[in-house]
Length: 385
Ligand SMILES: NC(=O)c1ccc[n+]([C@@H]2O[C@H](COP(=O)([O-])OP(=O)(O)OC[C@H]3O[C@@H](n4cnc5c(N)ncnc54)[C@H](O)[C@@H]3O)[C@@H](O)[C@H]2O)c1
Image (cartoon, rainbow, N blue to C red; front, side):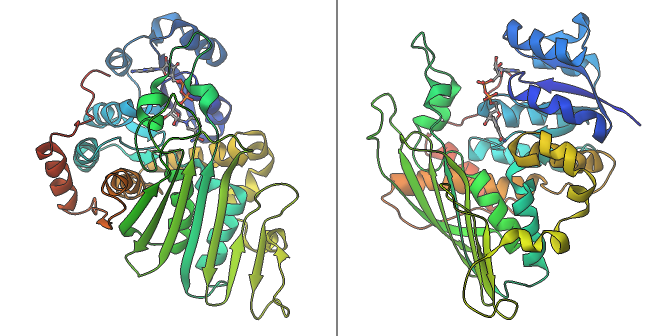
């Protein structure tokens, strides 16, 4: 059965068009307040003039079975909530929410809805991440105890427009402290570890690289997981240097994985017992044995999609979630990954003190949202979407 899809946010939204057919979606409506973006996507997708909207509610009222939210970060949770309240399935861009208050409202809406919520953490679907995930699950690395993730991507050209105006990224990514965009780094490593963060301590560099922005140029968080493992995450979204958006390490009692930092480096592993000498071997030696089925079947098409095939593979899982299977990145997992960034902001502001990461499955999240409200901190809820 083909599902009627609405796309919100027509810039990022365009990246999804080429992958919809394979997963059984048809784009039938779109929304964007910018007519140029709206018409560009709609023309590409063959969306009729009557189904091109400047207001999100109007698009929902038009009648869709599912939405993809490729809108600016503050709108993700409010737009997801509105869809879930109408039992419309949601694939939301990262991060899931920009405050504890939004996180709580999103969790509650997902609990009540008959529709599925999934976060589009596409980096977890990259080929190397999927192979490492399968290897970790099969126990090749032994008992896991340490991981690293880094997202280093100078996004200043997406923030300051040639005419001097700033996009939403200034307020929500550049001027907040801590790790404002953590999920591409923390998502894969927590999937490999099958774990969640329970506490973290974060430090920021302060602002040096660009006087336009007040958040941290670089921020690092040291995290303890529920199973006592150590995870270190760094994000940097404005230092002048080549991009390394998907740097990871994973260490266990039997071996390790390390991804390339560029400049001729490779994806590499060492597995005690398989590899005699303690020397690196190419990750791709393990591709035949550990590449998951979806990747094998859709290898060629995925290779043409964005973000190393992640944009393609995640749509297949979203389609399964729409048909009743448990979403691979459900609202709890999405919030586990998102909340680390929100806690890191508080930790940085308090000089790096270790703080608990609320469990969205429990009333810890309710308490965190209550504390946020009581502190008079901005609630971050956007009423108009
Ligand atoms: N997962 C990834 O790899 C990845 C890659 C790029 C962007 N993103 C995410 O996608 C989202 C969009 O990023 P972008 O680079 O396309 O941003 P952008 O600023 O280039 O585009 C945002 C678009 O959303 C539109 N918009 C603004 N308010 C809206 C509303 N209320 N309803 C509908 N549309 C609205 C804008 O007019 C614009 O066309 C962000 O959350 C970003 O973090 C994720």
